[in-house]
Length: 530
Image (cartoon, rainbow, N blue to C red):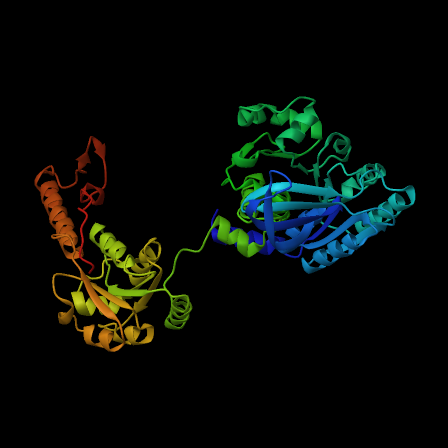
């Protein structure tokens, strides 16, 4: 999906009002390094280096929605303890308006994970689950009724079997159903919620199997899900069923019977907490923005994928979503940005390598030269001659590729760290600003013959030259292309029929005169950094 499309959808869903109902909890992440074995038991001793807490469950769904730009309200029951206050603060920090109903004597559900390196070695769960006291259930229903009267554009139910959602909530949503534009349900047990006729359900494979009263398969999960999706959607009473399959992405079946599949980039198990909440948030907001199931499923998978890329319980904002699904292409820097980056790298002890050239038609020689240059230090900067500079140096007809394309291709190379475009015939101003540790040029001449060598030495740097492959240059490649094109045109003209009105024929198919010109073969790879 194109970056502009994602940004347009995000603009349309920004500010949409979403009401989240469900089981809210607090996720804790205790991170450390195992450095020795415990004397009391055959287990590692983990030296804790960080402890952090984030909203979990329905609260994480709400936080993801807010991070993506929605106006979110969460209604949930919690314990009457300090953990509930911490959860409330984390929700507020995440931009979520919450109506948390404290139940005195009840402990807020908390899930703490001990992480050693990238491995979760233990999880500690505490808190009270089960039905709410009748008086608190009545308060929750009253709060939900008032929130529904305010006309949210979407209602999301997150029922994770903690028992905090009273059974009468199903009746309330069923009665108000016609006034709810979009109802999404994410539940461990979807069967009771079928009466609400949800627009969207997002079960994982185990929840889908439970809905059908069968066991989830160990192998062939995608084939099983594809076959069972119609029954899953029907049993859930849903308009659209989005079945999440972890490393296998997701399968989506909409009301018309159209099937969509998304792919994902697998992440470590320690990163998986809350990815389903990100998926749900992305899906409903995309639908609110007018996206169809195909686009909504892509947005949802992108949100989940970005969450999987980070450790802990994370949220996906619009910028993160854009960078994950459609990253900005590499770009050249300006001198202010470049000198700042160089200063930061040099402060860390990095050795700065600098080279320059036209790099018009990038070929094998260029790549070999740049790889060698990068091996001379920790940071390689490539200065690219502007189009005007190339014309002065190379003559009319050059460059073949404009400066933005030449710089963009170089910036995408793994061996190149930074690219800058310069207008002068010589990079002396850049050398004075950057003061590289090593200045590299290609060719068969000595450093002393390089015009900029004296300046580099005066700045405290060194100059090195790198040989390039013979007969591998941009000029040679361009000449070969022109020669073969001319030969192809001559051959086409000599073999053309006598009648001027007849169309040339290639491989027995009529084509236009322009298409009759045979394109040149791919040019041979070559070197020479210009």
